[in-house]
Image (tube, rainbow, N blue to C red; front, side, top):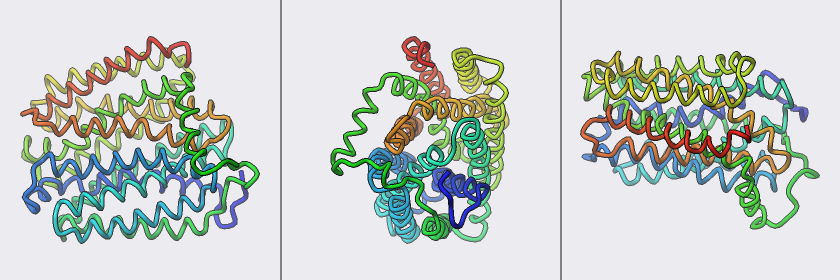
Length: 392
């Protein structure tokens, strides 16, 4: 590990985790306010949901751009630039006079967050090796649960004292803190290991990664499961608040309970990886996904509790798959790690953005729609498994 002047190893793990909490904080914090925002701006559920979709779409695109650039220029300048963009965009969101300015702010928040996450993933590969890297991945995944747990609770609490603007002012503060930490961070990619070609050529490194079937096919297969997870994110407030009649604060408790259950995923992964081969673990993940989808379509309509417990199996298995797939794919990245990291983050978030758009379509019943999306993602993943089982 490159010696850090201002961070111990535990502090470095904390910093990486803090950066990985950007997506949940940038989305989950204002989820309880989505119905209120629709009334405030006089906007449809689809248009309000687009504030989530556009964030994750640009989040994904940004990672593709800044991964190769971090391989050429280093991690620190990209981190500082991305954090600065995110912080400025958060201010724009907080002061948005209409839904379209808010969408523009979310566009640039996504750009900044994508740069931050790409650097955070590359730093793990730069700084840790072997069993230690595996443990770091699990630790960061477990600690990242604090974001989805705390963000909606904080958002629901803020709504007791302010309106939806408050969530974006908090995001501005988070961005400012990360910017200060970024300046204290010591570069982990020395000049001799950086890409030596031209800037445009560095972006062409993505083409090299995309041609590696042993990397891309498993990545696509695992990434398909992000679609239903993000679909849940986009419709959960409407389901709990409008379908089941919960308050924004009560909704935040249910959302936090689901997020807390996701902490079990990385822990189960450490156990399961010693009991199952990669192929058997993948098959098990698909079976649990199918069971959860069927539960949502049938008893998931009964009550808020039934919906929660129907979705929990998928939540847990999806968070088993995250460190599982990341460890497999990072170990295959021998050089240009920033580029590999960008693709590793881009593809899941691309499917996640698609899932958000599918989730907010006019199904007439968001619960049934979510169940269909889960079963569809499982079916496509199982189809892909035919081509990648020998590559795991």
